[in-house]
Length: 179
Image (cartoon, rainbow, N blue to C red; front, side):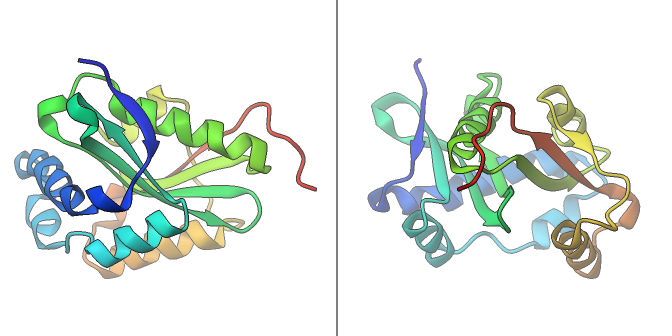
């Protein structure tokens, strides 16, 4: 099956919560199962707002139907924060998360953005260890990273274990200077 990565269309936003819910099922076998289960699913209005801002990408499969998505937002003048990345487990193993992140990186360069950033679980194989394989590195000191520091703090306040959370960054090669 061939897959493509593109901006989300308004007519497919209703399909995205089901992808997020299906992707979250993988967490049931982790120490974070209860917390992930209690975390609210992204609202259609939030997807619509992101789609209006060109901040929502989908991995589309057969029939050009979404099977994964990346929800992001620009932070300052240099970063694109990946707020949510979900791939339906029926399509796992097709490198769709990697393709979504590569497309985001390609989007960043011409716009003068120099980094992809995210926060994730340190101790889950398809989170921080996987992102490290895709060129992300852990930020061990968040002193100069106020946005990422706030994200981690909010996640801890929501019940996530401080030891389980990590902020990561992927530098964007070949970016154009901002004008």
